[in-house]
Image 1: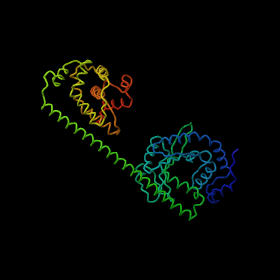
Image 2: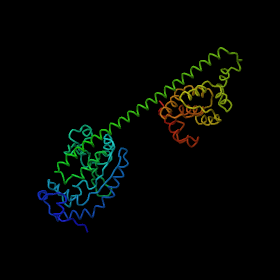
Image 3: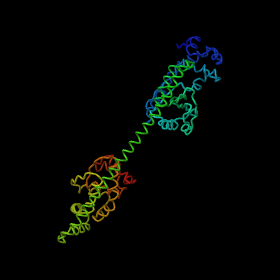
Image 4: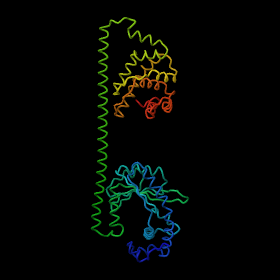
Length: 421
């Protein structure tokens, strides 16, 4: 059996004057009836409160979440105060008129995080009324106006945004109050509530010190935002510098390879005494006339200027070139998928794909910053997939060719969407 304390004790405990109670215009017996009814049904609110708290805990910008279900005595106190201001609340409608029977508090680290949480709340629940933004005199109103909040200048400097949301975890619709504020604001409001609200509001000394504390918490929020923004800017500057240095190194490597290539060409023309039939240029021209087979493919891979250029691209991009491990038979499997039968077609495909392969490797290294290794065959396979994107899927590369899932997804995305650009 639930029992409310006697009237005199209750009014004294909660600092309610006889005048305020008289304005409430409700007899003590009716309040006892509400107290008993709510005490019996209070546990029914627990599943909704717990579910909402867990849901809010999943929000990316939420640092911590806690909930409470209103105590029966606090409900009676609130009914008296609201009735004294003219609001008609009784045993039949109190569960709808008192909208904070369930209270969820969502705390975030930085002031800027509120906008993310606000969008989440508005997109996921039906609001019972317009959100209320409690701010201090002198605070900027712009962001709250942008998000369609009712703005309240709180006399004690309380800062918090309150939402009333509707939920139907069970048949009965329940209205819950969601309070969103920073950790610093939570610290101030908890202390303020503990030592002053609502029973010692007339104490001038407490009020003055709590006002100083309020200003300090506001300054702490500003400092937190400043540090967060500074850290983001420093990180972006560092990443931009590293990317530019990596690109610079790639350009230098590419120029060095071009210089070496020019030197080799000069020496070749100067010392040219090779018989015509053994001339590599003549030899590769003959290979280009052949159909693809194990022998012709080996001959092509070992003598083709296009393949040599492909290896240079691997090295220029910053990847380690690890040589070949019997890649000819592997390549034949990919050629079979796309119906590639002529060495000449393969050569044309590689030449036309050089720039795109170069972009793929360079972009991959800049994004990941890793010193990766690759092979000649993988570069040729890239060219095949880039030229025949309709023939390949990530799942197929995993199941049929044993690819790593993340690499398969990256290559297929590049082939279909050009994300290496």
